[in-house]
Length: 111
Image (cartoon, rainbow, N blue to C red; front, side, top):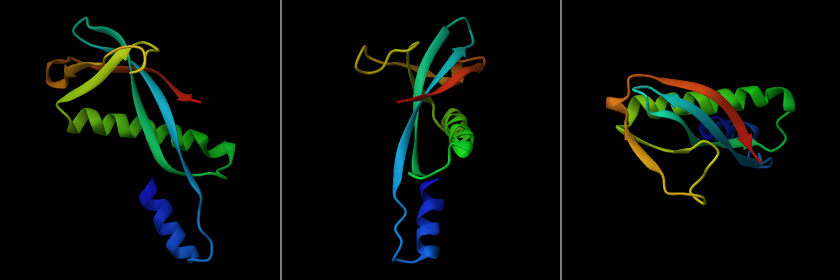
């Protein structure tokens, strides 16, 4: 998303700079092979600060695509117990090649 914002800024010109922000999402998943439910986190960067609320579903979908891309590209992903973060506990890294399936249960913005 940040590449698109950078290109938009260049198209607009140097006079107008697009102010952006990062939005963090908690993605609650269920991992196959009887592992259970966990949370992982994705950050969508380059979101325009003045983005209308009607477009926030697009940003949420970007977080889901980012997670799907991570599943496809990485061997290990970090997960936490549902609702926990690195401030609460150490992550558990799972080898995604050993996981039978992954179901996204919920995606929510962290404020």
